[in-house]
Length: 317
Image (cartoon, rainbow, N blue to C red):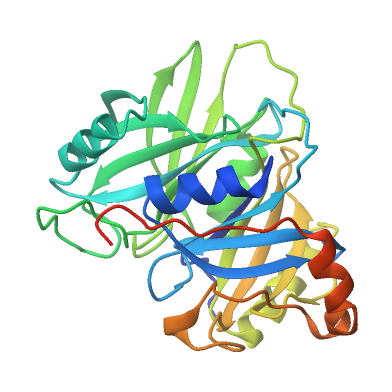
């Protein structure tokens, strides 16, 4: 078996109160809430999953929202930003829509010959919208595009060399470009095929910052395994290279393994199957609270603890 990572599966972050998070990602960024469930290790806390209409791997952004979460801060050894892909010609539509909604953003600027804008969510998480020809191949159609999924993740590292070798020598990424940025260097790596969620940027920076997990920070970055056989093979390969890899963990909608990459960022490899339609039809995703089997007997207690969430309508829906 020739093992190569095809791209990102999802990105998981921490937020403050869930309602503001839901309002921003649905009403402002036009994502679909594809699963409303709980943190498996803390069932008194939501785990919210956003994605495209079909909840496909490579479009998924998830949050652990905490009402009392203190503010976090990105720093070395953390993922510091994620980006959504915008089809070629669609960035102007996004800028007009954001301006009309009084959502501030910076840009447009250019990075690696791609136009982009930057904004922050209610907790200060850096969100980038990058116009690209890679990914799904969707074309701008005069409306704000919503289904393009992830473009990339930025990892802020002090010493990127060992992480770069992990990406190229094990994951099958190619080093494609490098540029100076903010007193440091941004180095891009692309997965084979250059499809959805195929880019990882390694950033070194002289900006003084001590990272702190909290609201507005990325908790971990998840890569795709196409099936269970490939997933188990990745576990064996990583262990053979000296990484401290967890056992396979059943996350209901995918199986997961976790390990720290050399720069300190928590990496996950998640399987594509079984997917988010395993416990509710695709057309009804995200409408009801779904609990893992082990927490179902506690449903009444959990529902009393969780704050209510009202789902807004996305613009143009």
